[in-house]
Each structure stands twice: as structure tokens, then as C-alpha cells.
Length: 483
Ligand SMILES: [Zn+2]
Image (tube, rainbow, N blue to C red; front, side, top):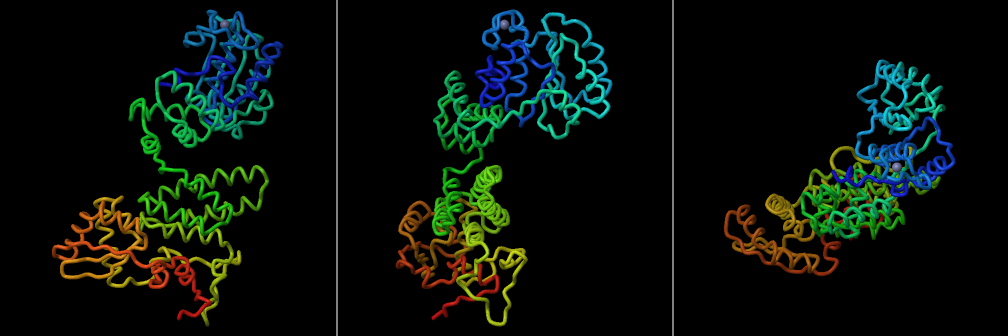
């Protein structure tokens, strides 16, 4: 396991917890080490590592500036796990009063191989109330040769009496750049070749947990070898290909709907899994939401919360390759209380409102499903569905980017809105489309493609007006009369 192999050997090697290790080093150099510490914080942020380093530094025969020497017998015994006087207890499996009573009986005995006994109680919040009471007595009067380090991910579950007996350190999520730099160091030592953007992706997924980040890097290397491409790294992390989730999040915050929808369509055009992309987007927005709340930016937090809510409601099950649910969710989020501002309520139909002054959304199926499809549209949808079952990427170029121009005896003509889509289908996807069209029509079919005039989409087909369709489904009609 790489994480165990590359555990820091000094306080200064501990990533992202400078506020903790600086204070500890000062306490060590000034002989003011407390007899009980509480290390609280998320998993994988260095609590156990720091506790073991504290045990080394306390017992080290020639410490330097608070750091352990890592050469004396005490340092070596602790590093290789053979020191009898470093007692590590997992409170999750030793949580009863008897376990703590046993600890209290033994703590009175002098250390056997080190200068001090150090008790490391991991997951200490798991102790029973009786065990806490027993522990409290020991914490109140520990023998001079004993030190306690209580570690927990859930400090709020500890009795206040325990917390007040300890000097407390809150371990923070390790910043991404600190994770990246530690990964870079380990990768260089291990002979892994991973570029910086791959390491950044790993750091993002690890969400401030250095242990998780190192484990992820190890998994990538064991799956793809020591020189994986960025694509392989992202694939093994279950991420989408690029940074467009970040850029789309920026557009949401800037309330730039047009730019946001453009990105959503690009994602679909590239044949990416929209639901997966949306999940990535939600994760990014949630991070920003938390930052906004911590910084007291109420207005920003409100925009982000609304967007997360709309995105979480988007239903991609009907057609995972379609950007429409994402587009509608973005529109509802960005246009906020006025998604029907450009359209007035239908005559005789009172606009449905909820308490927040925004139109109520129809429940159940996505709004884009409400309008019945024409015969050609049904054919195209069927064709797309069949192609998608065979080759999702090749099928993506058909999705929402073309329409049926003609279905002849031997020929199917598809018209495209964009040249690139037309060319892709005419080359990469041709065989697939012809095969599936043949199955659907029951006769050999040659595919013909043509480019539709610019803006043909908007003039010809009400189908493409996703947002207008969404608004209509909410009981609105366009202000401008359709001519
Ligand atoms: Zn030493």
C-alpha cells in the first residue's frame, strides 16, 4: 500500500496541516506538550500519521527543532510498529467500559521500552457512555509517563467533558495543490508518469483526503501501468473528459444562460454521458455552495442552491444522450422566478404559482415529452435508439442534430443543422445508420445527407424550442403570435 509506504517521517512532511504541526513542534521544543490531545477532522487528512509522529518526537533520544531524528532506537521501534509503549486502540471495536478499565489498570505501569507511553484512541466517538466516563477519570489525572491522543472524524458526538480535558486540533481537508504536490513527489519516487492535470483530477475526487488521493493514484497505476494517459486516469475515476463542468458552473454563477446552454449542447454533441456530466456539475456547484455559505455570500449561495435543486430534478432516464433536461434545468435555475417572463399565461389559464412566486413545475415526466411526435420524428427517434444500443458515440451525432428530409424506396435523406455533425454521420456512423434503417424499414437503404439552411431549426420545428416547450408545458403561450 503506497499510503503506508509514503507516510511522512517528519512534521514538516505532513500535507496541509501547518497550523497543527507548527503548534506541536513549538510545544515539543518548549517542553509544553499536553497530556491529552483531540485530533478531529475528515478521514485521510493525517490524524493518525501526526499522532505517531508526536509519539516519535516525545520519545526521540535526539530530536531536532521538535522533529524526530528517525535514527534512534525509539524512532525506529515506533516507525516499524514494534514499540510496546505506543498503544493504538480502535475504539470502534473496543468500545466498552471493560476495554477502558483494562487501559486504566495498565496505564499505571511504567513504560517498558520507551520513555513515555502514548495512547492513540482512534474513532474515539464510538465509545459507550460508560467507557467515556471511565476514560474521563484517566484524562483528569494521567500518570506523568502517559500521553493521550484521541482521534475522531465526528467530534460533535463526543461528550463536552471529554473535549474540555483535551487540547484540540482540527485537521482540515488538504488543499488540492498540497495533494498534487505530495502525489508528484510519490509518483516521481515510484516511477509513475502522471501529468499535472491527471493529478489535479485525482485530488478533486479525493476531496481533501490525502490518503484517498494516494490510494486512487495507486489504483490508476495498477490498472493502466506507470504511464497512463489523462483519459485513462479520468476513466478510472469515473469522470467526464474535460473541464467543461467548471466552465459551465462559471456560466451559471454569471447567469449567462446562452453560454451555459452552448456548453450543454457541446457535451451532447461530443457524445458524452449527460447524466454523468450533470453529476460532475452538481458536485462542483456543491463545493462552491459550501464556500459561499462559509464566506457569508448569501446571494451567491442562493443562486447555487437553486441550480443544484433544478439539476437534481433533471430526469435523464428517458434519453441519457439528450441535453434537453440539462438545458431546461439550467434555464429554470438561471431565469429564476421568471422562466415565463417572455411568455404570458395562456388566456383563461391562471399561471400556476407556488409560494416562491415561480411557476410550479409539472411533476413526473420531463416536460419535453409532452408533445406528440410526428411520424418522421418517431422514425428518427427509433433510429437513434437502435443506433445507440449498438454504438453510443456514433449515435450521438444523430441526437437532436438532424431531421428526416425524405424516406424513399432505397434512400433515407437526413438533413443536418451543423456541417460537422453531417460529416460525422456520413463517414463514421454511416454503416451503423444504414444497417439500423434497413432493419426499421425492411429494405436495403442508402443514406444521403444534406445540410439544412442556417436557422432552419428555429423556423421549421417547434420541437427545437426546448425552453419555449418547457414554458408551454407550464401553461404559458408565446407573447408574439406565431405567424
Ligand atoms: Zn529519534
